[in-house]
Image (cartoon, rainbow over all chains, first blue to last red):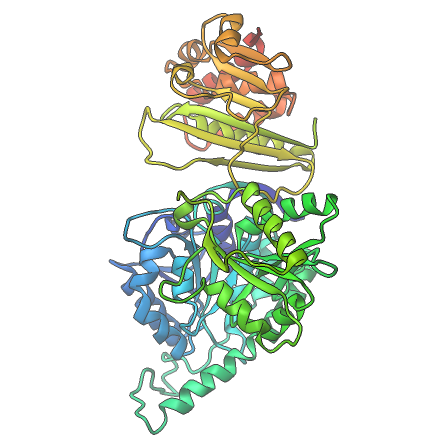
Length: 393
Length: 191
């Protein structure tokens, strides 16, 4: 039987990692992700996993260690947040360019300066185009389920791409919620034996990793990466189907909530989507046709599917928990705008920036945005296309 | 029980308030309920005011933000009554449980509780000193909350106190906390 427990998001991710039992992990602590690896190193010390744990002196080294271990031929994972991810920056591209199926939990946190340890999406958004797969998680259950599925997706023989699983710092990582753990043997069978592809340690078949590729072939190499990204969505859906068999829980590329007959809608990532759903129910009770779309597979972004899911609406607000300084709009907004670009009929789009550095996203914020959208749907008039909400003037 | 109950805890760093919210969530997990327990994270210093929250519901909990309209307010440190408005946003029929040796009527007046609101007191610090040897009022507060909300039976709460404290502490401390929880349950007074 599945075990029902009350645990934090970090605890849930650590439990998934214990059940997957990777070969190697290389990690460095950072708030709010520390707890994941602290618990996991406990599993290592207590003999609960056979993982070789490498404790390093920085996140740059942590990702370098993961890259080395993955190229050598092992199932590899790590976890980080914020500045830690920033320090991994050049290694992120090496992991993806070398097509190494490393799985990393990213506990989303604001970036310095000013120093702030709380949740926002600036870290993950900064790394959205580094060639990794990104799965985003609304709650502890999603984070646990996504972590398990991430191994199957990343290691799929058609992909061999690194994957990060994003969850909101503190709001999810440090909050206790009821979740269901799947039995150990089911998780073990689901992820299966790690399959090697050109491992460095196969001395009978020597290979080179990290070669110099000059203008004669570099562009073909990059095009190949773009092409493999186009296969990710199909794999994510196949893995989700198998996952439903062991968990009873359905996952897609994104979640739609009361969207089919909606006239106005919110697009929002992670924990704030849950708060928004309760407000959408309240608006529905008032007779207002509101709905929501929550991306799950954010990279590669399923543009066509998202565009089709949103094009019938009259007005949509994309809520970003990160800004893209110097760009006109927040990062999620730009993707949603792109997904609707080719549609003939499309909603009016507005953008709100919320919740930076852990600022609370409250039901009243969702309510104000939905009221504004209802007004736009009625009159077609837009007051402002982008603004910060829940902020002092 | 209402479909969802929201609880706000007011304490100071080092009193075990966050642990109390966690234990309550765990104890309420029985009978298929959904639970949340989370503190408001600030600079974590002993003695600094802090808040923690619980949501307990028969339906899936999707809300991920602080509790703004608590039905239960648990004040683990009565000195906070002088510095913050613990009644802020509380519902018309809210239940207050305050750790104090003072008379519940006096606390009721201090809180300016409305007619439909209930005020209870329990001398949790004294109970803790007698049972555990230290002023760690979380266990007797849990006992009192258990009594006045009927969220969970005393037996299953004690089971969870045993489980939670058992991970960290010696048998003597666990027994002390179990006794403190029982006394909090028994000694809570209505004003």
